[in-house]
Length: 269
Ligand SMILES: NC(=O)c1ccc[n+]([C@@H]2O[C@H](COP(=O)([O-])OP(=O)(O)OC[C@H]3O[C@@H](n4cnc5c(N)ncnc54)[C@H](O)[C@@H]3O)[C@@H](O)[C@H]2O)c1
Image 1 (cartoon, helix red, strand yellow):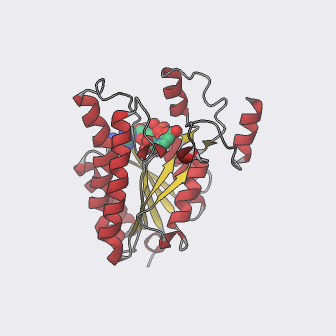
Image 2: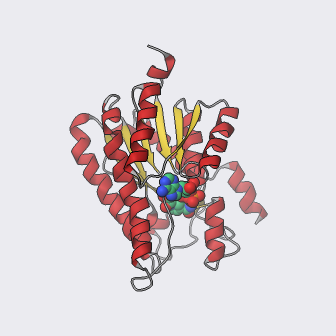
């Protein structure tokens, strides 16, 4: 068997940047061959090249998670290269804002399509390949899956749905040794999150957010769930939010042991 057939393999959606890139980097650094899949064609290849420059076995692939045909092509490519898949991370997501009344049908459809239907299509298409390795599935949810917030109507519903999907997949796949969990981030400092917060009235984000996490933190959680110890957990939700989900005021309560890069940044702020 060639090295590419025996090496552990992961596919991460929405990994051209932000949290997905952090997850791909963490999996790559722990020895996985990683496939970065994203709808942003140029950026996904650029990010794969960036990881290659760090010594990671990385490949970029263009994929719109809402399109079944894209999933079939992507999984066929991974299968051709490795004949199996160990880890599928459904991270691609959009962070839409709206209330019960201001959410229109287009926003509802778009949010549910990317954040929920996309994960289902991915799992459905990747299952035969995951079976060959008794693989694991990690869905990237949100603290908001269980702690709703006014103004996040379609987003909260999509992430709550993703939690239901996670648990249903876990029970359907339990007998086959395939695990499925949700990692739920709280505030994560990504370039896009800074833009979103600025647009919605928090231009100084992440200043003052003491329970901020980083893409590296989310990556470490995915690596854990993909490890032999992590494989004992299935159908569960792992909050990586420095306590945000259990705080009364969804705010600034706890400073966790963050990465040195984050500490430097928060001290500067
Ligand atoms: N940043 C946060 O504070 C935060 C908090 C909780 C949960 N999350 C979740 O983490 C995930 C990643 O968030 P992020 O902050 O890195 O976002 P981001 O916008 O920086 O990255 C999302 C990526 O998904 C890709 N994408 C969007 N639609 C796609 C599609 N149809 N097919 C394939 N790729 C698509 C985008 O091109 C982008 O590269 C999302 O699911 C988000 O809901 C983020």
